[in-house]
Length: 402
Image (cartoon, rainbow, N blue to C red; front, top):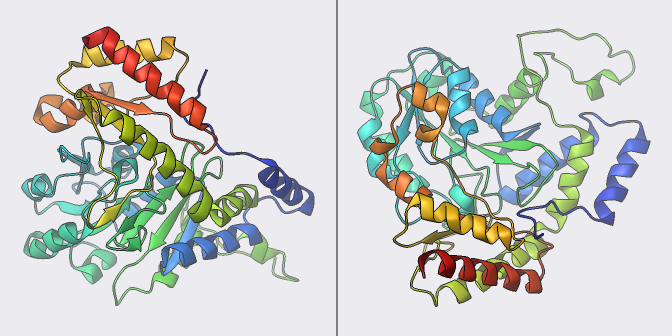
């Protein structure tokens, strides 16, 4: 059975983890701090905070910006539940917008329709690793400053809606020649097991807020928030006589460990010249073959201003129903190839249905979902396995639609 997206775990990673385990320091420590610096250098970001998940980063950002009861956050209907769930955790209202037909990303025109005086944050999602149009989003946010009603110090200081990028898929992607992580006020990456770069679980926040904000001070503040509101982490407390600490806020527990960080450092060292190249080669093989079939709608990976991180290959089959798509998927599985669907739109899930969201209000999201099949893309996928995947898809489509 060809798996969908197993992590790349080799002897380098096993050895690095073993060294950390034997070091006597396995929680947040020197490896985590070094990993933060390496990510900042890679992305050219002001500062970076590593955490135990991207979800934690999104929620910390919302809470830092003072998002709460009565506020609204605009995000795409086509995303994983984590993007929306964090808004609910803060007591705010999730406002869903439809997406672009071609690239699955949030529609700027739909964002504009949804903005009200209650809107505090725009949360675009870089679907599949392809960056959203951040210049257009910033232009829209600046144009709508007159609608923004600030509450709290940080909102008054920024004077507009916060742009919080859910960049879970797009580590290493490029927009106007610069890597993601620097185009939004705050960006959040995921290093979950199925992502291009993994730390098993994990994530990172990059801070690029404009003056008069001090991004390094925000980093320091959220380090405290991510560790119970304690003003010293375990590493700082190991200094001679430095045992005394204080709790200065009711914080959370979402710090990254050195075990996770050292996996990430191995992955980052070989990311640009090895991991991304292999993923791109796999996707180009899919593109070359499937472009010969009239029923195949090939996803966008590169245009004049953007290049994907090649996280997903979201193939769409033209002119089919959701039921036919499901039948094709089952046939592919029957040929010992694992595939997936990214994503079931939020309004189709029981919780969000119960909150009053209706998929009929997001026709593009539903259309893309109903015809989408995500194909395996991972470093260790061999050329022979790529051919097996292609053959399984072509035969399965032919079996269902002829």
